[in-house]
Each structure stands twice: as structure tokens, then as C-alpha cells.
Image (cartoon, rainbow, N blue to C red; front, side, top):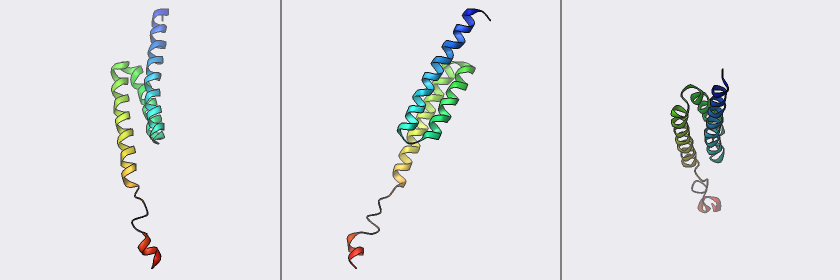
Length: 91
């Protein structure tokens, strides 16, 4: 391997790690750590296969999944107040 090839691989690895860190940050911000870490490693693996051509779409896909799961988690959390309102407590 020549110095040029080694530099290309190192540069590619740096770019894919930065893209993966975007996904990891998004996952941690929305409380979806598992999807964030999965997206991080998927971006690195995809980046090593096809570079940014695969790493970029993987990052977008995981960011979309993270936001979708976070929104779904917000919807399923219902407040306990309507079930046990003040009229039920006073009876």
C-alpha cells in the first residue's frame, strides 16, 4: 500500500466516523441510544464499503428512524391525570 492509499483510507475513516457521530448524537439527544450506536457502527461499515455514497444515506435513514421512534415514545406516554382526576379522588 502506498502512502496515498493509506491517507485515503484514513481520510475515509475520519469522514465516516464524523457522519456516525452525527447519528450517535441524534440518538442520545432523543433517548434512543441503541439506535444511535447501531447507526454509528452502520455508518462506519457502510463508509468502508462505498464511502460517503453509502455512509450518508445510512446516517439519514438512522436519523429518521431515531426521530420516528422518539415521536412514537412520546405518543404512548399518556398522563395519569385523566384516569384519576380530582372527581375520582374526592369520592
